[in-house]
Each structure stands twice: as structure tokens, then as C-alpha cells.
Length: 323
Ligand code: NAD
Ligand code: UDP
Image (cartoon, rainbow, N blue to C red):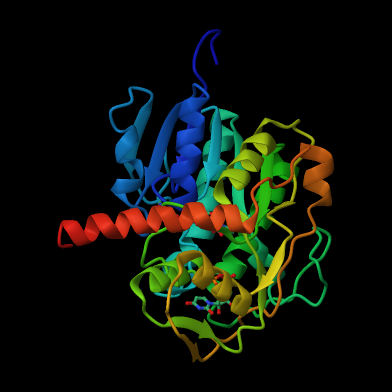
């Protein structure tokens, strides 16, 4: 990078939920942002506000194909994250994770760019260690309906560490736990957006299984802070690093909280639990605390209030325009 030049940052999956927040953060920091997306689950609405910004560039591209651009940093987020979307075309999901990782790692190798991988708590599968620390190897079904995502992300991690060992790449592997917030799609299918949309519409809240399974939910702003801090950390910090909020809650309690916060009269309905649905999940974030000086600042209640306000406005707008 020449002196005085803006850092050129590639965000794959930049039109998605996390990607669009990351683009916004990087633009605010003065970077030049190249957003690459195939719009599988991403939306133009998420990035419409950046299109007039001379430091923002959008490229419709699938990371399964090689990409030749000049960049200083790469955040590799391109992959559907919601079970209904990643299971819709599982072969494409594995390709996005594995071939996408190879293509982005090759790009990092050619340009000598730092590269961040959005890995996931799913690498731990249905864990028998609780909370999950980075040294836990996981309990993943290699042939189930979640495997395209779980094993795809595990293989991507392997590739990142092999490129590091073989080519000395500057890698940053983050294991992201359930993250929620504004700009999730109303039909995203993940639990927070499903429950908020159902509660606002007065529709039944769909609990899969007994609702006793747990998750730990991180608000998007906290997660983006961590991702940027990780990218800015020294080259020796490769990860994997867990990023998430260790406040654990059952799915049933989450439904009750959302009903209370929306004042909804929605009833609960119980549906079958999808196969391989993890029974518990909670990050051990000691490494992130120690090495990044980071921990989440947003309580579940604060994050839910902001998320509810977002969907309320979005759905109000949709009602007015008759969509
Ligand atoms: P998302 O579905 O909103 O975003 C994914 C984006 O990637 C979308 O814009 C989609 O169109 C794009 N994409 C998918 N396949 C692509 C391909 N082959 N080429 C180019 N673009 C492609 O999901 P998200 O929640 O924003 O997740 C972003 C990343 O973070 C994903 O890699 C996901 O696995 C990871 N992650 C997210 C969470 C979470 O809770 N949000 C948790 C763990 C990991
Ligand atoms: N879930 C639910 N109702 C929904 C959507 C999800 O009960 O409408 C459950 C799901 O079975 C899982 C948890 O909520 O136990 C989190 O699901 P999500 O798809 O958000 O994320 P993941 O399973 O990947 O952690």
C-alpha cells in the first residue's frame, strides 16, 4: 500500500446480514471496500445506502469461481448461514465454503493480503463439552443434513491452516456463535428473526422440539467490533478464536422474552426438531478477552429491542407499500 492510500478491503458475502454491517464499519473507518456477493441470501437493500459512496464498489460474483483483484485485506463471509438456506442446495453450500476458501486463499497468497475467515460454532457440532473452548475438536455428523455447512466450514479451517503452514499466509480464523440483529431477512429462517416476525404479526411462534435446547446470542455490533479487532491484531494471532456472547438461553425462554418485549399475543406451537440440531451451545471467550481485549457489551434485551424496532419498521413499510 502506498503512503496516504486507503486500505483496500474485500468483503465476500458483503450484501448479507453480517457482511453489510462490516462494509458499513470499514467505510466509516476510511477504508476502500470491495463487496463481492452472488445475492443468494444477500440483498441489495442491505447495501443500497453505500452505492453512492465513492469508496464502495459492488461486484456480483460467486466465490466458487476464482477472483483476480488487488486488495490489502479479505474478510471471507460468503456462505449462506441459515439452516433452511444452506440445506436448500447443500452441494453449493460445500462448494461456497471449500472452493470459495481456496479461491480467496489463493487471492490472499497472490496479493499478500491478510485474510479473515467467518468460521462457525457449528464446527463443534452437537458438543459434549460445555462451554466450548477452541481446543475442543467437536462432535459433528459427517453425513447428516447440517454436514454441508459444518464439514464445509471445518474443511475451510483446515485449508486456512495449511495455507499458513505451507505459504505463511496471514490468517485470522473466527468461530462465530449465533449472531442476530437488524438486516437479517424476514424469511431468513433463523430463530431470532423467525420469532420476532411471528410475534409482530401475531402468528404462532414455532418452537422446534421441546425448546429446551440452548443457544447464546451475540448482537451484531459486538460481533463486528470483534472481527475488526481480530483483523487488526498481530500476525501471530491466527485463531481459531471464538466470537460470541456467553449468555446462554433456552429457545423456549427466548420465545417468552420476545413475546414480552413485543407485547404479542402469539401462541407457541411445537414442531418437530430438525435432525442433528445441537442441544446446547455456549462459547468460552477467554481467548478473545485476553488477546483482543474484547467482550460483548450489548445485553440480549438491548439487542432484541433494536432488532424488534428494525423488523417493526420494515414490516410497517411493507404494509404501506402493499408488498
Ligand atoms: P447471510 O446469509 O446473511 O450472508 C451470507 C452472504 O454470502 C449473502 O449475502 C450471500 O448472498 C453470500 N453468498 C453465499 N454464497 C456465496 C457465494 N458462493 N459467492 C458469493 N456470495 C455468496 O449470513 P450471515 O449471517 O451474514 O453470515 C455471514 C458469514 O458468517 C457466513 O459465512 C456464516 O457462515 C458466518 N457465520 C454467521 C453466523 C451468524 O450467526 N450470523 C454464525 C456463524 C458463522
Ligand atoms: N428454532 C426454533 N424455531 C424456529 C427456528 C429455529 O425453535 O423458528 C430453533 C432451532 O431448532 C435451533 C435454535 O432455534 O435449536 C437455533 O436455530 P437457528 O436456525 O437460529 O441456528 P442454529 O441451529 O444454526 O444455531
